[in-house]
Image (cartoon, rainbow over all chains, first blue to last red; front, side, top):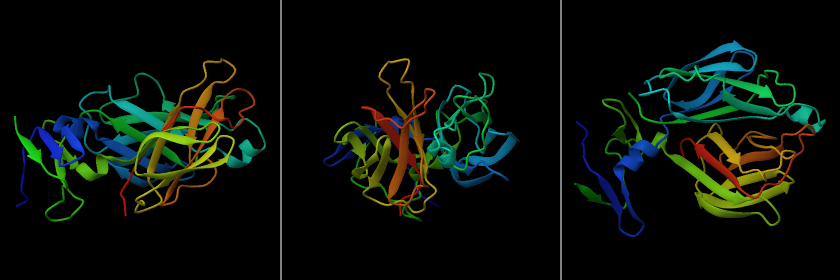
Length: 135
Length: 138
């Protein structure tokens, strides 16, 4: 059986100390790197059970362990369409929540789209991270 | 209150596998939830880091193009990079940070671009750029 330690503070001999609640609360509870083109696929992840393709540039990220509330912090980024951008056209992609109702404790629906046309876009590289408490 | 004084935490069975309780009952890997690299840097002029973790250097690839080179390499190229920037307040220079801009990340670098999101969508240098990266180290 693995050992278990219950502690409130971790202290390094020279680098200072940290309350363990910062370790627990400061750790990402989910993150994913995925290919959003064709048959979408996770490359690497933490606490992600799967992805749902809802349409062009429209994805749901499903959590293995549920979040405690839907008020978690999300950060996302997506790759530029390099060819289009090099031609100075409207291929800038940003990731964001699809709507206020879409973050849920079990999944998060995001959209990836072009800034100037506001059209959805399937991006090759998409990154999302989540901070908050698990249930 | 309990306190542990220690310089290194190592998993008993697997070195990088320590489980922490992160919910009422839910547990997860301590290692996988921690950012392995983060940096706040000035991307204008001679680019320079203001604060960082696991950063060896920054490379300036031209206007709005940067490589974040890490000290300890990632185990795979598929790490997860997100970032944001502080704009200059001008409505004509709205800003977005975009990660993995030109090529995919490698195990030793994070490739980002910062872009002015107005109608021209030109690459642009910004004075306050933040990036965090998650994944296993080698």
